[in-house]
Image 1 (cartoon, each protein chain N blue to C red):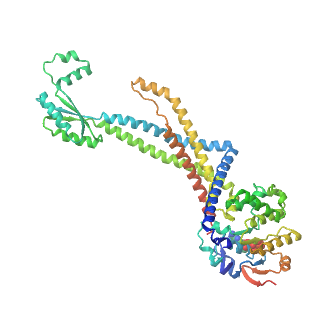
Image 2 (spheres, each protein chain N blue to C red):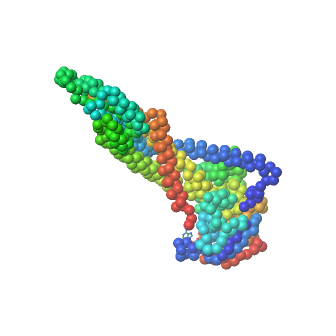
Image 3 (cartoon, rainbow over the protein chains, first blue to last red):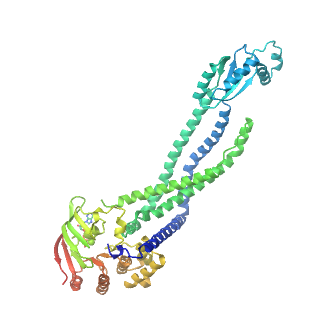
Length: 325
Length: 222
Ligand SMILES: Nc1ncnc2c1ncn2[C@@H]1O[C@H](COP(=O)(O)OP(=O)(O)OP(=O)(O)O)[C@@H](O)[C@H]1O
Ligand SMILES: [Mg+2]
């Protein structure tokens, strides 16, 4: 508009460079100022700020805890996958040499990971041992058990395992293939259910955090309404107006995340002893999952991000209302 | 510098605050805008600041139709205009110094450079000794002068003032007008809305007169 818009001849490139770097410096200066200023504003009302953060923390704890539990269930899942096997019972008349050939034939199937042959005698020994009936069965003249091959499949998805079972049943010398899919399927369904519930809760409670921060920031915006109007009148950009509120939102989010983290660790410690004792009473080895470094970082990062987003929405709505039609 | 082409402004679709306004202001001019209360003086200035958009016609500033500015460009447009508001628009939780520094803060002027310019502006309006005071501790006239200092701190190429002497005694009013004339002398275009007819008559600048939203007189400078 004025002479200031005219480029300076000759010194053009140089002055452009210094102008860019000075603009960057002033931008950083404002960021730093707003970062501290918003923290100071939060500290000016410590109780109110703490309550907001606590509300955020409570909203975060439930989905985070569920996520932890699912995470440890996934480990359990992996262990179970390895034990997902099929048993191919061989025909009664098959002798040991034939059994070994069939074993090799089964092992050659592309979907088969490994096989283990259990001869009739071995089968009997295992059976006796597991039932503690060594004496009673020991007196039987004939071994009524067929030889069998334990097959571990490459793919442990129920459909894949079922298809493989059909295939193996067609191999000559194989009488019948047994697989216990029911519990694998049930477990898979349970895990899927858990994942969906966790996702739904995470979305729901994430929205909750947005609402909490959004509402708090909306009130802050309302109380600084005149200031926003004045700075807009004299040429503040939306980014400039938003900045202090975004920092407030981020502080709320970070504070809420830290509180949630503390609640999770405290709760974990409080529950650890009874859970371990309970697991031991079943002869299992299970301890409560803990937030590791990556999990903690994820929690804090997402809570800060949610705070930022909630603030963004609140301020943007206000700015949109201010614009002349 | 400024051109109004058949500009009309309606509020709420019915009430016609301005109708068929047509005038031009050259770069470096100084002029008054006068008229009864409710004549549309503030509305006209708000159109130039793009705080309102015209219902019809075009408002051109420095050759650009400001209605066509994208809203992200508006802040940068406003930074080139210094405005003295009828209702001061000061921030009551900040010292006089920080109120005047606000435009510079928004533009990211280095603090040391900003301090120099703020003190110079406060000095011009005679309030340097009150820089640490809060607006609430100042009289109405003093607040008005803070608003003037804030409007000029940025050395704008266009200065708009809405009743800048409304709360000032005759002596101070004259001083402030002299200040505006000083700015005008170094090339700033100055447009002042006022109904202080005695003062306007004495200063012999161009006068636009509004009546019920219409431009009824355009007296050239004597
Ligand atoms: N935002 C608005 N909504 C509706 N009507 C408005 C609005 N702003 C101004 N008006 C009306 O437009 C007319 C012109 O108002 P304006 O403020 O421009 O007058 P003015 O000449 O500045 O008066 P004064 O000398 O009292 O400041 C008035 O009748 C006013 O009621
Ligand atoms: Mg007015």
